[in-house]
Image (cartoon, rainbow, N blue to C red; front, side):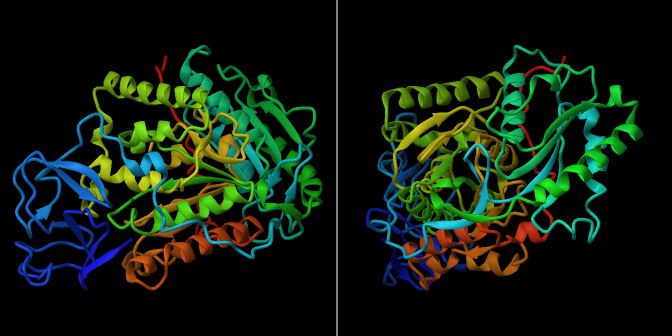
Length: 511
């Protein structure tokens, strides 16, 4: 439960030894009945001690240790990176083990259990109906983009109202790599995941012809009769001929893709990728646990929620392992955490290099503090599946898919795994969007929401302001998920954002 200490601060749990500033506080601002005052100016979202914290003692926020005091911290002092270090290895976040508390059980909803979506031949559910132009290699990127551009002018698709767009998905790799490498396996999974994604009514795959990632190895299962074709530039006679061929192919299949119409489909067909980016101190208070509430509602309806961003939840690893529904799932998740330790060490870094500068400016001090919010997005469920990056997710229920914390890379993996919708929380502000899965952006605080209304879909800052509860906001998010899945446009879609955000995880040697 949130406990207000005074109009300018918020105490989040009875056990906390810090409060969060709800506004920019001057030096000398009273904190606790006038007995504790700020010793220096405190910025919005930053923490201030409300009692003495001994050197080496835990700093506690949300009832959880988020770091250790580097030195003695006096009441009223600013608590941040200058006097707090990361937690030692071995701490287990209770919130990670039990699911981030969201203020009680999910509230029932009267929302219809269907939405208007696209039913695909293989039984999967689409929330959009795009024609995708995919590439096997960077060498075919220009051709793909020029084909898509031929259908991007105003009115170009006016005769095809059921087609959401013709979009190119390009990447900087596909050659100079070992076919037996981890990096190639990742690219192959992403390509397969997008080729078969239910938000595509048809797909072209374009190669150069001599690359390592040969397009002849790709296809669709026999149960999926949506249009798919592969061709390469060298066999076509060069750039001009390949572009003309692609335009002709898209023109020919547009009527068939347009013939597919929305129909009532079950909410259980929704697979939602959970993302956060540009987090701030309010993310763990508002947007992330509210999204966790919505995730619980979604899975209670038979849908699937996908939590990722492995480095950002790593400080809660032991607690997350306890939430795996099977021993095999726990073993798979542990292997991913161990892999990340080795991966970061191999590259001379560490997961603790996160948080980013924007997180720190927004009041997040440690990775452990950031993890509280990142974990909260997954609600209170158990992990029914654990998947590697871009591996197919079957659902239903809460799923963990391994990924970096970098938003475009993580979301690309979730979409490749089958996510047909993305929910993205942010505190500092984000301009992220995704195609073919629409992206709902959730603001953690009212100040940023008002400042970036062109990009934000919903203001979760009302929780911090005391104008709405977590339960109410979680229901609003869940209702927005269903509305967007049914065709309502998100802010990023209205701005035309999402094509350039296709970013498969690149790893391994370039040969």
